[in-house]
Length: 229
Image (cartoon, rainbow, N blue to C red; front, side, top):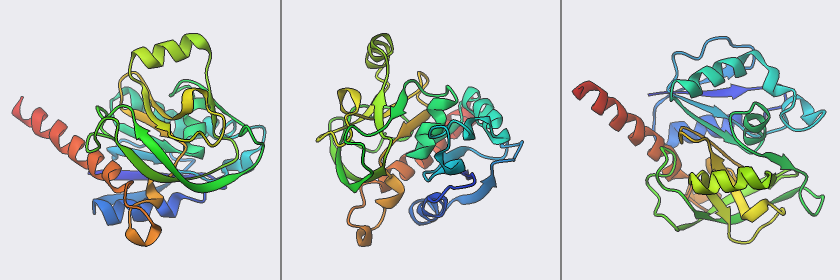
């Protein structure tokens, strides 16, 4: 399996994501610059956190126009696995690949601490190794993590089980405590907490490790099934 970690001017969690893939699943992983125009070699694309383009205009608003995002959209349509973390989540919502938007935190301050999440949907390629309703500890670090969508969208993503994670103690004012959502197909997930910072005991929690092993095992099962057909 091959992973791509996208890099925009201002990304600062790209190295963390790269190292997390190496440590948790030991698969091939490459940094891919925002000007890339071909992602066909990759099975999973990680859109990392940071401050892409300095968060000018609003978070992710410029990055969504980067050439690589056209390829991310194609990969999503092809059913490849895409995960956006923190700023990556913001970019995916700006690009229309995920529903909703991320607003300024309710307290108007940057927050950085461990957060307890509830796994709302463990039927995605990213969460299959968690238990439904399980509580996990994943750190957050953001100033614009307040998830919002209109009532119609909320009803739709709730009915479709697109709410993947919720906060146990809402840190930022997110609607219905939402911490992460998926697209309808479930192959694109965005979340504000940082699973790549929760893969080793030295970091205080290993609860993010199963996200990466979930991805690998989902991909293996998918390809095993394809080979039988």
